[in-house]
Image (cartoon, rainbow, N blue to C red; front, side, top):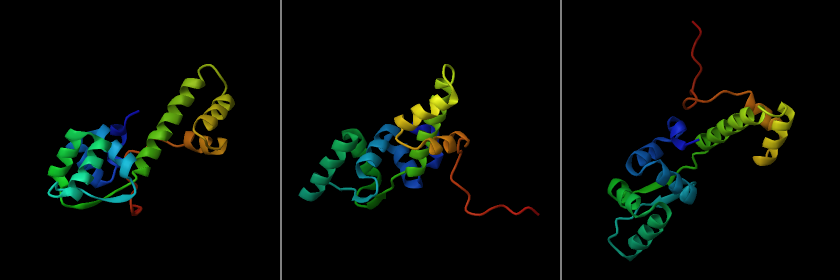
Length: 145
């Protein structure tokens, strides 16, 4: 499974970052700086150069240069992207369940997945009863009439 499968669940800033530096580098950015505010450096002074090196170490030199061109001088909040990452995990659980149940019982598959993903068997069952999410949840429910 790939983060591009759930790109529509990513926050708008990260979708822009994905377009600029690619999905793999964006995921590295989220892994390294997710949940924090990061000042994207302009590289005009020593402090900016230090921040740039930290960024380049996390996402690579080419991606860091692209981020500086796109967002240099701005402080950005790097979201955790938990909704998209959770959806990827859930899709993986459902795919693994299908694979395991080709040779074993559903109970065996759920027990195996609970250990593999470090969650309760009840949570695995809940995930198995869900379908893939295609987009961000709606803010309001549509009216019937």
